[in-house]
Length: 406
Image (cartoon, one colour):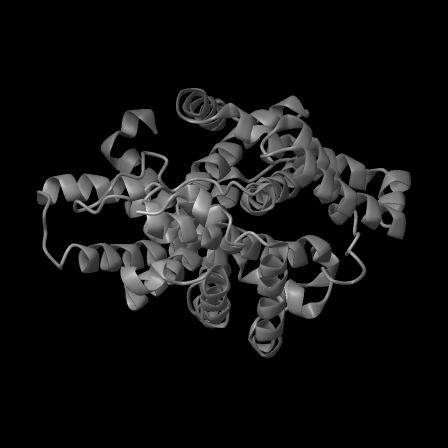
């Protein structure tokens, strides 16, 4: 095995590698962007849309740096470099801010939220591609275990249920493969936090003057109980940053100020300060710095046109795929090269392999978006109609079986 000090001294954490990864992704996505429908600008925040793709790429770079050490030591942990650690931590924090911003906005702007429609929409947005990624994960698990079933079918089935709950019920190792989650770079840890936020929305709606039913508020009660028992509450702090960002957007003076060039430079300074002064982006003071960065983007600051560029916006549309699938390609590179060859790579060679993976990953994500994500999102009206018919049928059945209670 390798000593960690010898690994980190070899230049794997040079900032230039992260920059080149972003540049490779942008160039590779120029021809791919034509296959991704552009969002309607009047109903979307284009700078936020453009941000999402770079956040997912930052997570990829973060995990690639982890793989360099993990392949040699068997230890999956945050990089000792503050920059490479925060590429992942700050990116996920800003994903949380985006979710908070968009759905808090929906709650306070709606006279009455259609909760069923909201949750069906979230399920259709997140589950189909997650299901595909889980099937890929299963295939790689059985490949790693020699295509042998080493667990009892019932135990295996229970673990599958845990994973298909968006890992809300846990993300255990499957079929004896230690470190199952690391095959997909461990990204599933963030999904329960997202669903806790969605579950808390009815309570937030009540606090801002809406009147959700008691049954809907029960969802919030369960979400908060789950968070208290299972989650690290500090990691929920970025959701407050999204709320701050929305209120900044609602102030004409603040919004106008945060779109100025000086605000762009200040946002960059905040990001740099977080890396310089804090080892982790999860520190509350670092979250405040990243909240300013997000707020400026939410107010329409596109960082000198980078985030509103059509290529950036299109890449943002496939960011969920980048987030879910990149771990498979990092794992695949390790398996394809073999442990001996992979661990013999120099830092520069390691990053060259990563750069080669990025275009292939992006092609996969565009195909997944067109074949899985987009059709699922467009099916919400049909699903809602089917649920309405099913509800009517069940109510009719109940009236016939229990006429006295009709």
